[in-house]
Image (cartoon, rainbow, N blue to C red):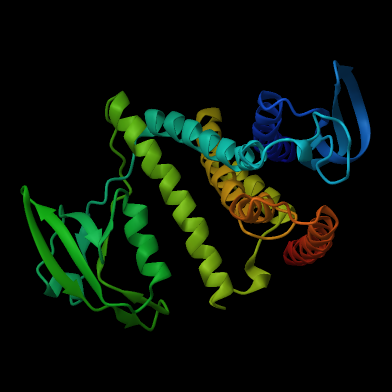
Length: 342
């Protein structure tokens, strides 16, 4: 069952991403030859109008195959015949649809269980927070100028900035205070601590609160993905710690096993939370300025818009081809690493 759930989550997220490309392509009058879910040989396909809709053998991946996207075409409705701004809208639509999906799922989740306010549950004796006079019940407003909307953001900030001095603005009894905390290395736990923790309790508001905090939830996952990439590039996270489809399926399976004893509703909420993470993550990753990704295509299109002259299609195609090969090699490496760690 858990593998079926994993495939369903992947399929919905990828399908919605490709739907963004598809709808904007149709809107701009671009011919779409095939819209498919999955990769590899076709298991099932049906043609309606000019477009073939199909399901492929491998359940991970999908595509919106447009006329003239990666090859020369004399069709007046080909991708390359359209204006640069029309092509930009089509390319950027995929990641944008992922962000829309993450927002919608976040709204459902927060409407069901609320949000974790950045409120201190207790302070640790002898640590910087207690010495600075912070108390249980204080609400964290910002850390080094970064606004905090969830307690998760507070915890994650310390994780992404270990040992860094933190200027904190907090609120108590409608009064705001400022203090500076210097994290202390806890040798037993092997990490820097400032000495307070949250309760994990969540607060539910009205529909406007849910909409507002859904935006914050989307922002949280986008920021987390970007900060994680910075850690990877900076060498603070090993490539061996990066998870691919196999690792993600394992995470989904483990989460399912842990939550199924609490009932179907809890399984639904946990799967929804994972879907938010994956959808926001896919949106960010696809906007990276790397060949073969949407972000790589955007780089060429933005250069074309500035120069008002298109880059040689053969050269651009070669760059994307090389990028695709490297991306596939990386995926194989990550998949092998995932299997090795099972």
